[in-house]
Image (cartoon, rainbow, N blue to C red; front, side, top):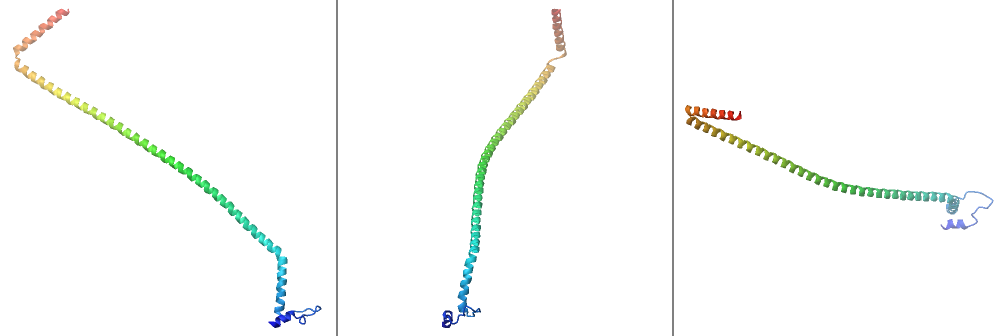
Length: 184
């Protein structure tokens, strides 16, 4: 190593300015080449690297801006969805209340209808019962009357004989004749 550094610092090994040639000493030429390459890269690459970094920075800023815009749109959509949800919940509650009211109303109407129908049926049954009672009473009265008439006819047939019969007829003819004279 001492030999390599000595050759780098020693002037007797450097070629004179008038000649051109390749220096094969790696340790002597490598730092020079690296510093030249780094210098050229910095000088020429500074603009390219700056442009690349600016482009990257702009893309990152655009991505952030797009993300913010998308987030804002998502927040707006979320708020709209929440508002629609609240509106739908209110409508559902109103619908539920209206339907419960309608069900109660229909229930009361049904109960009233059934009550009216039952009253009508009871009235019909009472009327039919009264009709049947009257018919039964009429039948009994007719039967009693028939029995009374048959009994009276039986008594009359037993008590009346032909002579009494003829006398009743002649009395009735006399009454009719007197009535005729009065009316004339």
